[in-house]
Amino acid sequence: MWKFILPFAAFIALAVLFAFGLNPHRDIHALPSPLIGKPAPLFKLTDVEDPARIVSNADLKGQVYVLNVWGTWCVACRQEHEALLAISQQRVVPIIGLDYMDERPKAKQWLDQLGNPYMAVAFDTDGRTAIDWGVYGAPETFLVDGSGRVLFKFISPMTPEVWEHEFLPRIAAARRGGA
Amino acid sequence: MSGASARRSLQRRYTAAAIAAGLMSAAFALNGALLHAAPATTLDDYGQLEDPALQARYEHITQDLRCLVCQNESIADSNVELASDLRRQVREMLVAGKSDDAIFAFMTDRYGEFVRFRPPLEPKTLLIWGAPFIMLLLGGAIIYRVVRQRSRLPLDDEPS
Image (cartoon, rainbow over the protein chains, first blue to last red):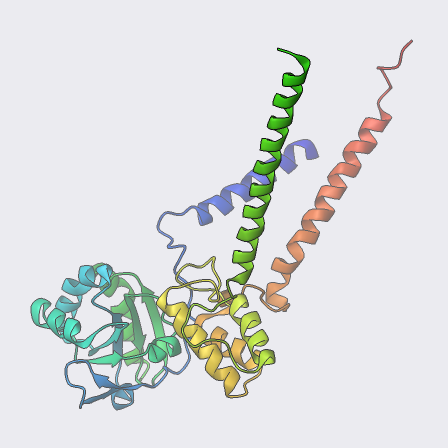
């Protein structure tokens, strides 16, 4: 009896493991963020286009916003730019940019040429804000609720589908929750 | 060929071999010396920490933190910019007098447990740490069963 049950059980266990582990839709490099549910780290940086202007997420207290980490060196950021522009057209939530490991003139040129979907772009001079947010690449997109908690993090280029299925429901829920 | 010339030719060959061997070992020695002469550098241009105890802790900590860009390299080994930023962070916290635990907590608060190559032994990491022992027990049990079964078989290869 065991002679049949054991191999069968082993087969089922392997099949389940493979179904999960070899799932082509799973990004094996995407790491869960320990920041989810925690207060979003505050930053106070200068505007990428105007070093005299301060950009801080402390000013956004009380509203749901999106923080998008990008850089001109990042190919996938260029890829998602179209989607960000379309999202900003919807005027659902403000998008704050965090320009990471970059140079000001290049960033300015990027925004001039491709269009600017951001309410403001903070310039992370030395990568410290990125470390606080647990950023390890770009693009990364965070959703923060009105009480300043991180609701969600998306690692990969933004697409209209991701926006619709992952972000919009969470934004609606956050607003219903009175945040 | 006379016996003497044969001997000489053999001698010459031995000499050549000895010289070659000597050269080769010299090359190896030199190579080794060069390798050792290269300081165990950090990739940054800060140089070593002044306090050797701090430097030792710095090396230990950076070797235990995963570079999240290359994921199988430590931040001590990686030359990507994020690793360099994280090394700077470790360095600054050490100089500021932070404990190893505080530095690891700083990293796991931001990047999760995955950032540590040796996660601490906790209830949720029990499976990771216990898996080798479970495998060992499982393998041992299988071997035990097989050996017992085999030893019950009649010996059929003895000369009759």
